[in-house]
View 1: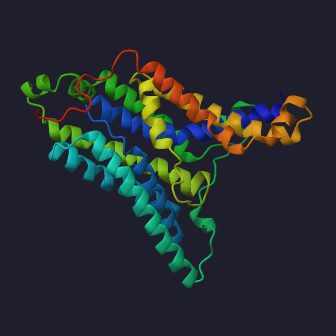
View 2: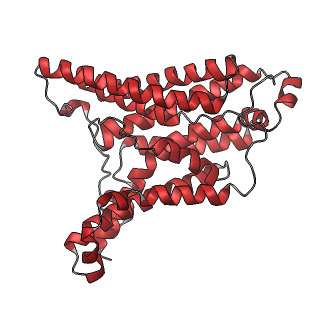
View 3: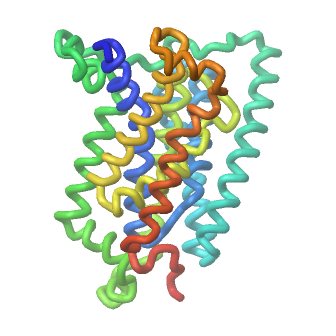
Length: 323
């Protein structure tokens, strides 16, 4: 394998893993508090459409990012009101949230496209609204490590800092102890005077902000475009990776990097079957590209099936309060 191929793999692995880690941090905190939100796909999609439309109209990428975070918080707050406030089933509500976000984002995009065509606006994201990767002088040229870690978007470095901060808070602070206790024994927290509904709502809102920012990364940073349902199931993958990581920050990050590697590997494999002189790679030219794209998701499905037989997560996960 050539150096350029390895460099591409490492760079794309980190790039693909960044939104998963960012959304996963929020989902991890939410699940540790006892709330499972399978509507994270809808949260990310809401962030995608909000970021791109606002950045396109205002010509300001930072406003797009802020809009994505706000959209994630707004949708998460709706989820919290229904599940925590009204004690509705979390799985059913999360499913409804995904359907709502998919339909609403497609409708908003159709309206926006029609308005943009009538206003003669450019179809591409304005140059001043698009974020650029940070290239650290000299260090970004280090083979393998440089492009992977030192030539990423700024949100990647923020994600790493957020992961470290979240890990520290969850493991070494009273607030983290309360969050973990909410997922295992909310009765004990109630006896200690903890406001369970309020604390869980705050955790859900935090998860929404993370998912919204992850959506912004997809639309105004990595692709600088919007496509209907562009998240492509990544929200569901985040749920699997939280389970794969056994509800720990290190496990989550490892799982995200593994999925990112599998995703970048299938992209490399698709390209190599047309450019390589290897006979076995050339033999893959007649295989539809959809089969390559499904490989990371197939791996995630197998991981979920395998890990479902092992230790369960927080004891009160998915249970409304009070019961």
